[in-house]
Length: 423
Image (cartoon, rainbow, N blue to C red; front, side, top):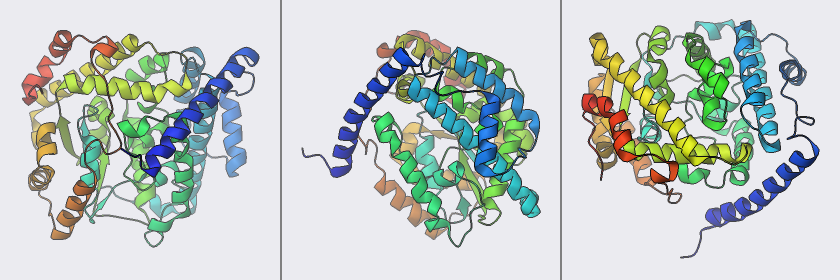
């Protein structure tokens, strides 16, 4: 079968990109001590660079400095970053710090941003690879809703405006930046669909607090991860709320629709900041989730580090999501008063009849599902079939995961939520 143009382009770029990456990283290992002499991840250097780039010097609440320092130390000590990894981390840290500076300046210039109220946001969460992205895309088609798009999460300042929202120049800038994924991660689009104007996971807002699960998804930051797991996540959600205020001030909707699997690990903090939040939780057989999640983690990390031990990666992914499943199961079973705040979605039912799931969500949360919203959602569903970008192949055995042991790890979760094993 003949390749279409985008597929052929990705294949060629991916082949060229792999050769470039191998060459650059070989040079860095031989001549630059893994790039440390060329690309520094020093906190003061990164802070000063972001100040120079933006012309601002007020980062807001200085409490972010401690997690930033711990994260940077973990990048140096744990992550085994190659040259490409160091360049990527350096650029991302500068981008996020620059965003903090610009958003703080916006608040000083436009004090009304801080008065924005975030009412009854919908949060989609669940184990990774359980349909959260697809459902986020469907619900975001409701004209009444507001879902953060990739471009405005990457570049939130100045606050977007309704009048110029669809042709904001930051959209094309973001598309150019995302094109590097074709080179760095040629298999990325088989795992996850991304574009400047598609809804973005709101975990990308929490990285601005440097208290975020985002970093561990792309890098081996083991000491930061241990430290972060023990921290109060409320400051991360407070910055998350600041981010939403920034985005909605000049471009409002009736309600936000947000999404990230990592919310499973911090629901108590989420409810502290958003006491009227409504949670849609997706459920899927963990034996289908784990190898897909591990394979995606391999795709995300491979460009930035040395050889990946697939069995260690599988064990890491299993521990993280088994712990998360236990945490949310016990929260739901112990805090009965939260029962009406959740709507549970079965992955097989979501794939079989997405609109039936949507109707259930709107009915449960007493929201109006207009004819216009239904038409837009059905159009999205029709244009986003499964495996549109290609097949993503993986197995439990590939990552050293034993089916019987993993079934035991997740049995409490499966029993409580009635999750049925998939063939």
